[in-house]
Length: 194
Length: 361
Image (cartoon, rainbow over all chains, first blue to last red; front, side, top):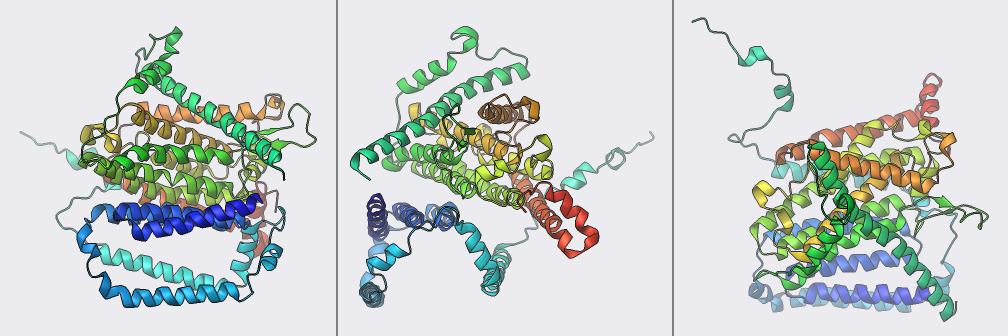
């Protein structure tokens, strides 16, 4: 019973926060609503005994990704009025996506796959099964290739980002610490005979 | 489960939370006192010694003073976020204590088996602490942005980039601990170090111990990495516009995070609640853990009295060019050592040596 209560709490808050993201006028508030939404999603993972996924969601999305979002939002000045303009222009595409998603969700929820009986069956396994270990076992054996490909893609993106933003500045002065430490008295002082 | 059971369970949870939050708040108050006395001692002066015997009532006097001061909200500040920011900063600092195991107890023989003294004995405890402590960035960012002041904003941005940079090397040094302990649970990590000083992880992971502790100092914005506060150029960084209790809340969060880092270092590298030698086992484990943690808090204060502040580029250099390669190299070393025996028979002495710290394998 407690679990059902918490499910409705997390689920309801997640939906509410998601609405807040798109409805709030201030972009800073949108970012914060999104953070709340991630929190509730991670709460849902915890209810499913997937505490590894729940914590990773907070660690990656809330702890890292949203910080960068917030950085960007803080730096750029968003014109409140201009944001509202031209929403009619995007309405057909956006409305289409929304409609398709809605139909998909309704179809999925009425298909009988997610009936309450099946959901209850997949419930709790027991404290001796550690889902971090289980995920690790599957990830490094069955899905090793996919995992490695994802890692390579991330590495490429990382190097790409560095290459795009790195620029050598000729006028800037850099500190070379090993050079500083290795300096000897003879390098700096010369004896001049008068 | 009836309603009565739920109420009783809720009451027990509330008591557990109070049993951790109240000591944390009290130790924060007295760490500020200890900091002033210790720095005074190091700098050959008195420190605060006027209020009460040896100045012991000074934290209370400070608290009262801050409580009575007016909270000033700057014009054009975002009022809601301005007020919410200190709370956002304090919340993660306290939340992370939920998984810290303070020792094992049988409650004077009442229970058959030893129970771990933690609110939640989560089996992903390390990740939880990392995730929650990374949230404290938001309090700082919001404070900087909502104050509508350039100094506060620059302080907030500095603080954030610093925390993001050092979180990485911190995470990698934790990975080394995880290779040895084979578990993400803080309790299992402590259990892996049972059996005296030689079993503690700081011996095989000495560089990681140093990296973790120094990154912790950077993560909590402690001196010599207190650039976000940089009085000389930024007045007081992100909380320049705050006064009274809201200002005190930021300090509470900072010192709370400092205690947390000290506890985590003791748990992961210094054997948690185990005594260094068997014959000292008559002292309760909790006392050992707190003693280790407070020694590390003393080291934090010692840092502050000893080292001048880093320059910003030096700070970034240390994080990215020194600590990050070190930690990655050490992961490779520990990982190789663990599986060296499988590669060739001649190398098995390496994995035997590291196996001393991996009794679960």
